Image (cartoon, rainbow, N blue to C red; front, side, top):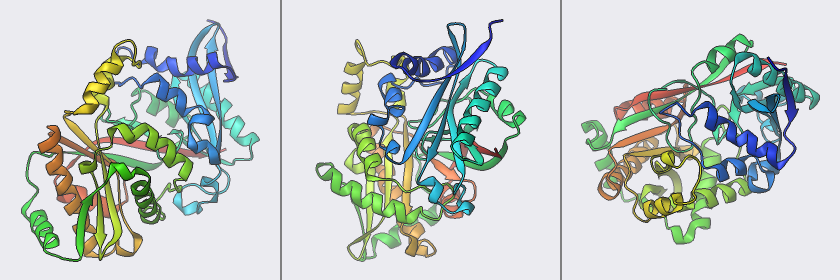
Length: 383
């Protein structure tokens, strides 16, 4: 058997090989959704990913002769280093992610190389997999292999869990997604809460205005960074990240699927819902050419989807311990549920990810009778 060599990614060809590897490893997995290769390259290209404005990364490829057999990223988020230790990151905490390998021995070699790079950068602890920002695809899938991930959620080979745990990594945090049938009305208690809110003249639930995209994004960013600031794993989103994410997501942003709640005229909560683009791209094998772009353009004009995903929602910190927080959440969820069913033909909703100890969001997910459909785990160890 040829010797496994681990080398840094330095060339355009290396980056292409890095992106191409999962297409071979998952070609027989019916539930893997091939990413669009242009977006996958953008993720690892500093000039195209605003996250690099406060982070650095080194990618590695494992080869046996000329054959690529594995990959991994090692990265440091300088904003994460400034976060309180009790929130997961903090001084000395680096990360790894984008891990794929044919065999366990290849994975072990890649992980050792990534850890060495982190130690050389002064890191004393590693968390992973996080690919690459906590806001992108954090955690390893450990439950829910029997159906495809929705937009901006990860997939993995089932054997990876054992490989990571045998490498002396312990679970640090569990992230869950919840699914529900959105064609059904919510329980009567939720309906009563919603009616009460609709009768309150202080509350206004409005949809966003895509013609004012930057203004609306600034409002949502301000609420998000306030609402999530005490959560485990929180790193504030920056303007360069929002700009680049906006370019990527703007085509699938629809006014009636994003709601902002106002109290006495002040924005205090938001909920973002995205149609599951994965349903349209799954059969494109990562490429928009020669005919994939026609399919996507047609889909974007009037998307019809089975699933809607809620990747983000938040209520300002000052309201989070009040009854009003849940009321605003239920009101936004109901408005979006109706639009998703009536305007897009959706039948299924997915909420998440949600931290395993986020009691407020877990309560909302339980009250609307949703069920866990996928579980992701972030692991850690001292270096």
